[in-house]
Amino acid sequence: RIENLNNTTDQLRLILSSSQARGQWGERMVEDILGLLGMLEGKNYTKQSTEGSDRPDFTFKLPKDKHLNMDVKFPITHYEHYINSEDQATRAAEKKQFLSDVRKHVSAVEKRSYINPAGGTVDYVLLFIPNEGIYSFINQEDHELIDFAMKKSIVLCSPLTLYAILSLIRQSITSFAVERKAGDLQKLVQDFSSQWGIYCGKIDALGKSLNATINHFDTLKSTRATALERPMQKILDLKLDQQAAEL
Image (cartoon, rainbow, N blue to C red):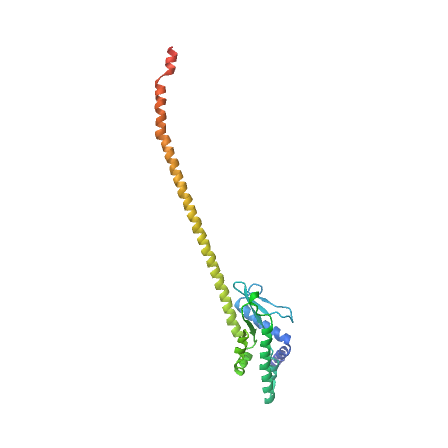
């Protein structure tokens, strides 16, 4: 088991030693979180597959054609050196350099085109830190870093905080879909009410027309028929055929 643990540690160090591998590691952690939330690629988010471009690693789709970008690359080389070093002076220097790298990375993310309200983005971007320990270390050693990032419209998030943020996004999307369907239903009800009023008006007009037709029919059947039968009966009473025969 110790040998397996050493192998795993060596593999982890190998991952952390490569910026590309670290990015893939962060992407894998994000994808695991997205899978837990039931968010689907292409429907709830898009993933950038091209390396080295000024494009966000993940883009989350929000209601009203808005979207939120996230960067998952994070500089942890000097943090690894800080952890592995036993010399106090070296540890202090590596810690200082790591915190400096974090601030530089925040400033670099700010300069990218991740925030573009005119293009449909919200007015902030997520910066993913793929480890709870590193996230806690940063908050503990640099109390002003979060405010520094927020002033640049960058939200630092660990796996747990990312899960919380994406849960809110997922809930907002669901609520917006329900609200939109409720609005569509209300519009349909209004349309139905309008058409129902027209229908009732036509029915009333048809009823009046039918009543008038029935009245005309009754008049023809009774009064007018009687009026026609009187002269006809007088004609019959004349017995013209019999008088012609006698003549």
